[in-house]
Image 1: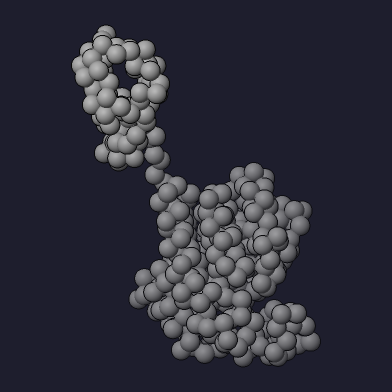
Image 2: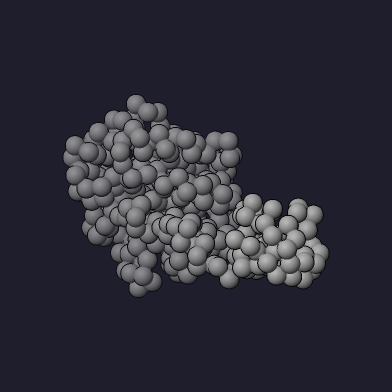
Length: 338
């Protein structure tokens, strides 16, 4: 897990966009790695352990019954092990959200290094206790929770698991409208729990993620797909490879800006050559004869900035010229009677 001082953790959420194809799942790992994500995250569904056969599908996906969808798109233990190894080969961390205690056992056998508790499981106390008992770092998503429910979940994690917990602001809306992102809630979570925090971004652009990073988010999670036209519950609202690369590049750029403080005075000295080009000096608007008292109509303010700065105009007006000063010349202090 990372801290704000370290590199921001970028999670490519695959979910079930592979649609049960193990080949597609492996290709998604390669894609997430190519997009420079730090983590590729799946969902470990065991239909019999987590849902009734007549459980409804969400409003944004009515393609097939929920039980049948999870059963059809799930992988067996050997496939998960192979996928875990494939992630190592591609130098990207494997993560998967468990939706049952049985799924936690499966992921423990695989050897995951940390857990992501999905939004719909925040009130699932037995599952949270089971995950906390692994003593591994936990990312808690908050998409459909009240403060009371989050307090309860955090309390369980903090009592059982002394490892770091990170809490993510998340809005369970696909796609999420900007007015429902809840950046204020993300900051309130930081103040309420004193824990690292981040954003699980369900909007259709990268703006919310960029804003979250500027506010101190240490983790950004975003859905990734080959194409928004793929079948399933996630693809339509996910980022294309090009969009995800823009996300990563933007976050790394913001990260660089945040991690490099600029000393205003020191930087001004570094760009002195530019200052001389763009700033201005006090110049003569006409021929000023030796002995002439310099009046306002005799001088102007023009580039370059290699002479007397305009802020010192009071040191020029009313002074006598001790030499002839040609028209359109930079006036120097040595040109004036002291």
